[in-house]
Image 1 (tube, one colour):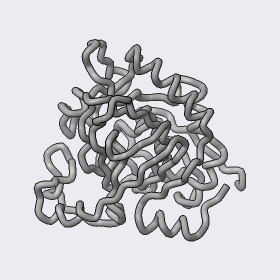
Image 2 (image 1 turned 45 degrees about the vertical axis):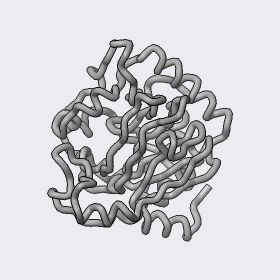
Image 3 (image 1 turned 30 degrees about the horizontal axis):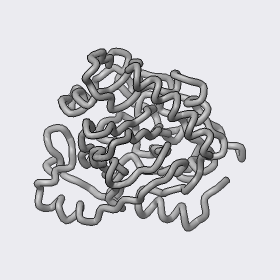
Length: 264
């Protein structure tokens, strides 16, 4: 499967692209069932809502997934980390051959999975989840360039009630000043200049099997979950194979998985 020229142009302009019903229902159900077991037992490594809300800029850059364990029963899990090695079903989705040519089109070269970042089951638990503020993922990562794309899989319905992703189209090409971000590197909604940019935000409700591809510098956010059911999604990130990781950073702390497309 390959993207049309129109789809490629849409991604270049907007910084994201929705692939409707890309993954089959059976796969989504398997991933979600396994994820629910890991969430129920809080199988580490995990990130909790407490960790996410309380961490400052440097703590987010230095946190080691191998140590991010929380055992208190009352803590809400925000994400399951390092899912590539958790279950063969997770691994198979991240190595899916059908999406490889698409990722190669967007990256301009063969994709490589970055195990260090995303590589997660993301959750918005009912009523206990928090808002995800506007941010660019690349601000926390360490690569030579920004040729990275994230792959978001909806495992069920996602909408504005349970925390669907919101994007600011074209923000991956914008140049920002450091003053436009707060001390935790979130895009400040209180800054007057930012408010005009935020007004251009868009969101698209997702159904089970939908995939969203988005650029690592695209500003995005999500509401908390105000419904009675958990929202569970799968996200991983790929880089262009020639985009080198900066040594001695969190980005270089884990191995990478090269994905060669069929048309190689």
